[in-house]
Amino acid sequence: MQIRRATINDLAAITEIYNDAILKTVATFDTQPKTPDEQEIWFKSHGPKYPIIVGEVDSTIIGWTSLSPYSDRCAYSDTAEISVYIAEEYRGRRFGRILLEKTVQLGQDAGLHVLIARIAEGNEKSVHLFQSLGFTHVGVLKEVGRKFGKLLDVYLMQKIL
Image 1 (spheres, rainbow, N blue to C red):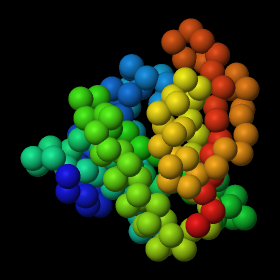
Image 2: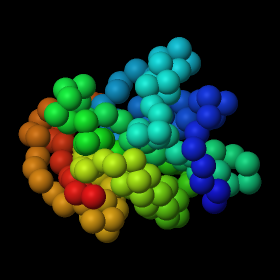
Image 3: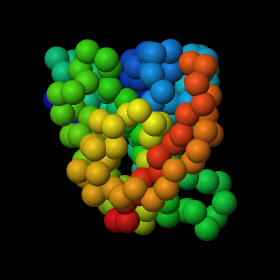
Image 4: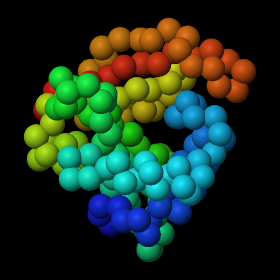
């Protein structure tokens, strides 16, 4: 797998992977697929401190990760939320781990202090993955999301860089 920073030309593939997750998983609490215009706004809100990274296999984007501002309040400026999405047919093959490792390093290089991961209940594989990268469990938000007709808890994990 080749890893690189995403460009605007990658946005269609990123959106396809994300929209599939919206429709089929609880990895995101978005419930409606994103439009190209919405995704372009999201993409342009990222930059050197908050990168979007893609992984390619045979010139096909198979996954992506991002760092996003945790909050728009200034005191949180050294904290970011980390996200990872892998195309369904490539999950369970260590691609997510490799992308996350690179993204954690980029966050550290950008001077971030804390990375936060929010993981919906039932996603033990993601919990285990983040634990293996040094993230610790710091809490549970009970029944904060409703998706597929079910109230879901969100596990909070963090890594101090």
